Image (cartoon, rainbow, N blue to C red; front, side, top):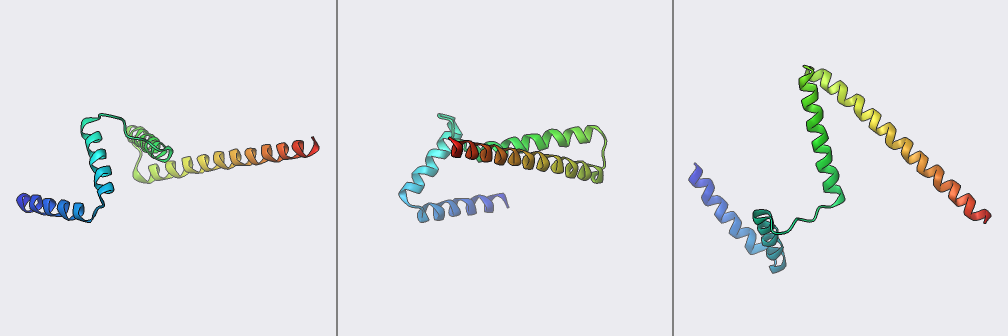
Length: 111
């Protein structure tokens, strides 16, 4: 079975390369080389940093809840509670920003 998978992977890679433009192949090869040899750090976008941070937080919380001996239902309840707290914090922060923008707009119009 492993041999068949290996053969299929080799065929699939060739087919993929045939469909790619030269620029796409170069970009793909460059990313692979950087990942393999870590020659230069890969560019990390703000979104990927957020995703990585969220995954790290989730892993920490999962471990903490496991250490507390919570059941899956209790874990789900805790996650829902934490989600509500975070949403509320985000909304209040957005409300504060809107209030600040409004104050700045009023101050600018009076100047």
